[in-house]
Image 1 (cartoon, rainbow, N blue to C red):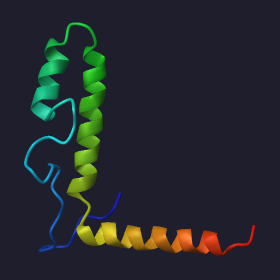
Image 2 (image 1 turned 45 degrees about the horizontal axis):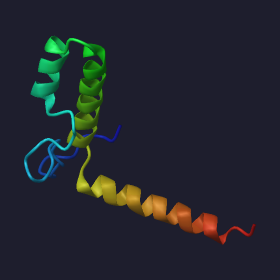
Image 3 (image 1 turned 90 degrees about the vertical axis):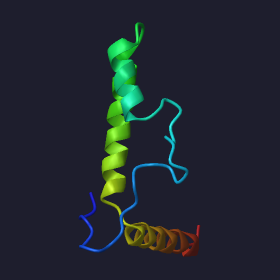
Image 4 (image 1 turned 180 degrees about the vertical axis):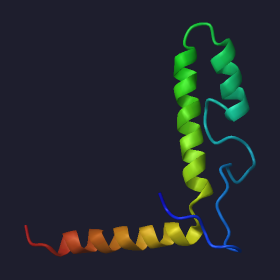
Length: 86
């Protein structure tokens, strides 16, 4: 996991830019409610909640600079692979 950003650096929030949940299953509150009340598959919604929380934790500790570094590294690797003769 990337290190937490230094003081003053901005982080990406765990919410979509428009302020609503980005997932089809709902936000954390809705997922927790479905874990408690879903009659058929509460375990599935519990897994969705775990995945949502893990993704939010990663985004909370990832800065835009982290994403740009990763992007640059991946593009460099992709370019190096293309240069290798088949």
